[in-house]
Image 1 (tube, rainbow, N blue to C red):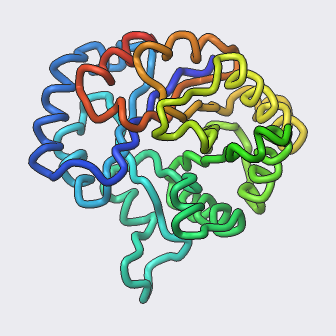
Image 2 (cartoon, one colour):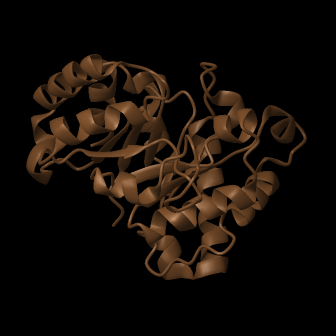
Image 3 (cartoon, rainbow, N blue to C red):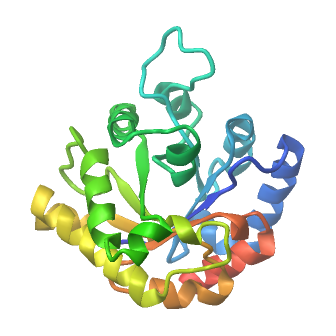
Length: 255
């Protein structure tokens, strides 16, 4: 049984003082998350300067935290980079790799994403590996083929033995921050295709335990419908995770 995961990607929003208030209000609004009593797992993914605040405020709460990126390198002379071991020492459980914004704005290749995923796993972190098509691929009828090709490249050299070492997030690029959302049927179809790929590459047992999230303008109104798909195991949530009320409503809908 795969526990649903809602991961809030704050991107480059909030100051440390704002984050401290948000965490306190969110925990007060969601007491069931404490002590593992909720039917859904929640993770918060703030920017690097906010991670110590997350560690301070969320420790022992039942809410996980993680980072939005990680270096493919270990410790060394890599100015501006953040090592996986540093994130692990802060108590991070998750780290996003291959987000479409990183791929588009920083020209991250599949090979680099795979290297980041491997480094994260070596440090004991769980990568949330993002894949997904642009509008031109979808309109050309290549959404599934493109996404699986991207996934294959982004998993190069990544070994999975249980399926719990990795989370995959399907994020149709055309739906991120646009207000557009893939239909529940589209999300399920892509998640099923991804699970099929994992079964062929790693075996049925690994595929059955790997969580596949949907990311792309998820909000309270569509959470339950999207998560009704048997292969959709949660969401990578952007804008709707910035407000306590909206993210709390999504947690309730997911549980």
